Image: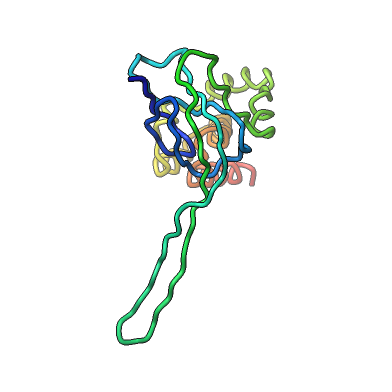
Length: 184
């Protein structure tokens, strides 16, 4: 018997070809076909296998009545709820092209394409050389205690490190204070 476990709308379903089921409302129109994310098949790791499903229509679920009652106060409230569902039919489980990943929002895609300037790499290496030995392992109280014995170059390198990597507020404040003391 051929079956698969798929994920649709954040929920998992065990499906077989020809099976109809109700899932949380999908954006696809009636008659559209789609390939849900496949999690498991008994035939192996699932490479090369896809599940094809067709949207049959959009429906409302059974009405659920919700009642609240508090004794001896006369308090009674009733309300109802009907879930928005989509009826789908599993057309096939078999070999085919893999489902395409959902498109990322344009802003996320643009952020991934932006490359950092290559000029930053040498500066980071210079800053790492100027950092006090073992700085990355220091805690904020240790940084506050040790900052008075560092050179200006080491303090500036540690400040740049905190801004780029750790962003620990206490360490940033201690380093800023040390820089201001040297200036004033």
